[in-house]
Image (cartoon, rainbow, N blue to C red; front, side, top):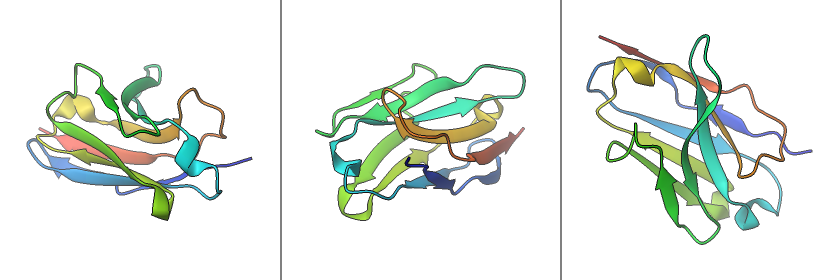
Length: 114
């Protein structure tokens, strides 16, 4: 079973930026559609952004224009560039296949202060 490792979270002020990374082992990485999810305290996990094996991207309305998902298949890594961060972006961020078939990782905490 594959379990991704997310990193890059932290504490930033409103308007700041962070770049999240997700690494996963396995030769099958490049054929998977990938996604970033987030879970805020007391709320359900939601899909934030996705990228297909063919590099087509899609975003939740709440992050459109501010977040950019990308992937580097040679490094088995998917990224989430987050700009113009808002307090409502505070959450634990997870990466996964789309649909989810891997084990969930530990996630990376993003905290945006007002």
